[in-house]
Image 1 (cartoon, rainbow, N blue to C red):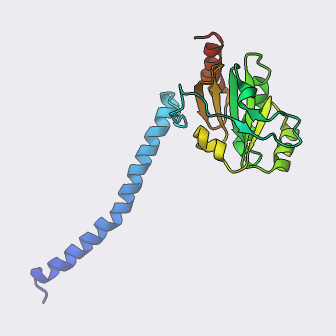
Image 2 (image 1 turned 90 degrees about the vertical axis):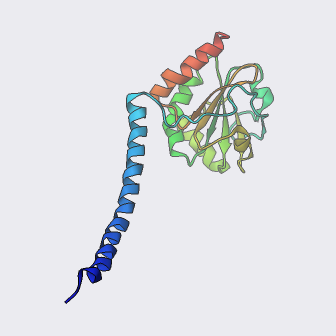
Image 3 (image 1 turned 120 degrees about the horizontal axis):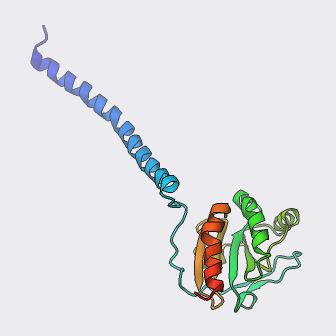
Length: 200
């Protein structure tokens, strides 16, 4: 006959197994709560979780001296191409699906006489970039090729598409990580353009 003292270690081992089995479930539940809170903040409170703060806001834009996209009939992207003009610098690539999604918005922005739209073609093949622009249209007043991503590093690019509004004095006024949509266009970028154009 087994005594209570002999049963106790076996019972403890059984309880320990249950506790170990619950740990991954508790960790998953914690992550689910955090993700739910972030989505709630974005949807209900209007906070955009994709809005990543940039240390460059309010600073002078990094220097630009990028070669032209061969065959695009668009000038190279240099400091002279944007000097003294309110400019939207857009980082794009042909392989970037969200870049396609925001492209119609860039084409509309290119019609705004207050604004110069320029592009940094990021880690792309020349023929693919030309095909992308040929298919969707070219909204850029100048395009600079960044085959190894050095310029993107200088600009603090997290991922593409990414856009920077640069004032006429060369100061970065606004940054958008990810594609523009109607909400970010009307609630963020256009007010920033209006403010900059008014000299505020």
